[in-house]
Image 1 (tube, rainbow, N blue to C red):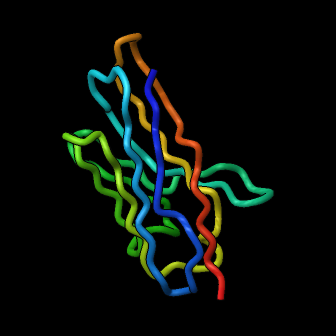
Image 2: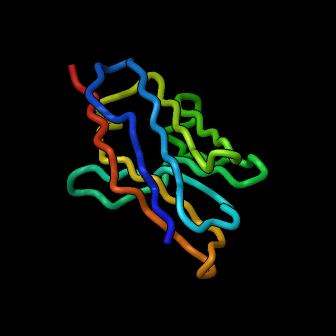
Length: 119
């Protein structure tokens, strides 16, 4: 079983910054990709950014130029640096990881961390 623990959410004013972290633990052989999703009230969960084991990244259009995803493979940790935050970035942010563990392929979710952008 693979567990993901997120941290770094909170309340920030428009234009501010936050950094989210997500650490994976458990019986992990390899992590192919880690990503951040978000879900705002009344909306579907959407992929915000994703990073593969070789460092390839993907961003949703609304995050390009403002958010940066990175990972520390040695620590099985992924980060999301969010700058120039807007009220529409308000959501619960979830970490996701997929890879291979002792029980085979896995896809795991974190518990979510609230990000609120408001003056």
